[in-house]
Image 1 (spheres, helix red, strand yellow):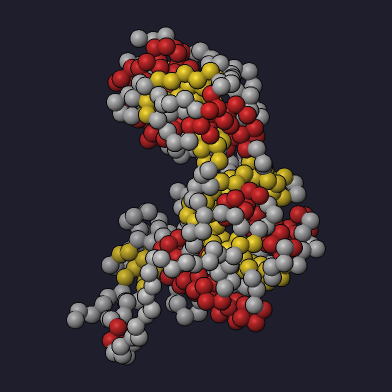
Image 2 (cartoon, one colour):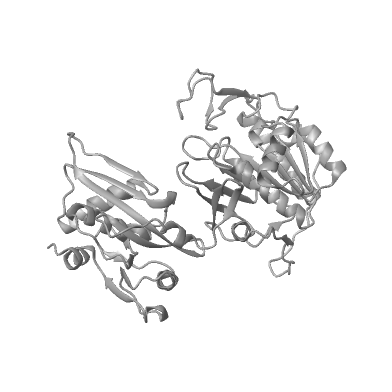
Length: 454
């Protein structure tokens, strides 16, 4: 059998290389390649050549009890978790620096501690005095949360064995150090090893463990992607520094729905839950203006209304600019191409700017029609009625395709006082009695009837 060779792994993106180099070929980061030892030759070497014991097998018909949950009392957090915190689960929370991850988890730890759980908060980035100062600012000093500042994983696990907590918060996984791994803290090897040890401990001891993860400049959690596969739940804490609103989004959840969101507002006394996100995102909407439309979207199981803003202006440069905030830039290019090819509306020589107001980040294709309407409104300098919402997916052929949960979208719009809606063809719903709903099967028909262009 050929001898296994050492490999070099990038601590920034996790890419493997056969030899050391100053720059990673995948992410172009400098001095990030770390040597990893070879994997074992096989079970004969690692297990002494002994046969393992047979494992017990079961069938799908066996009834299992639902996992026990503990609610925090914060409705937005419990919604994202799928109804509460599950015992013996491992959670990974990522977000941009300074967005409020530590604030969120300290507040959550305090709420769970008040509800009867034994909670330990371990910080590898801050001293205990710094965490106590934050707790004083948030008014959490009376909460029975145990606090420590440590990075040695062996010492942490020994302490957990003695204390036997119900919930442990690790802030952050990139600062943890396992002494049996010959690599620097934050490297791919260390992050993978410490995440594996903590996840295994959570399953073995029945403890819920929440790990904070740093993110790269692309917005992905730093380190190997295998960490996201290890844990049960992956949450992203999103928001723009210029806005006070924050979104907690579940991108993976083995105990609840994915893509669920919780909305918070950052205040001087910490994060406050927002019970009506649609009203919040539309609160600063003024008089009707060209390029402004309201999109009736769905985030997880919740309908959310938000405002799309577009600006189209002649470009002083040879190549026109395309700038997007809060939406997919490649999908904007597709919408512009469909408008030109299928509807005869050119955007050549025009700079296009698109923004989702309030710091919201929209990912679903149902926003296509709202984006197209915002672009046309800005290009023609025509304001759309302020009391209308739009939704619908646009295909490359120019057809407007139906989207899921149209009834819930219309119900949310009606609840907030909207009286008109534009969407794809489909059967009428029970919530159209108070709405003037116009339906279109193609984008060309929509452009002709709404904007008067042939």
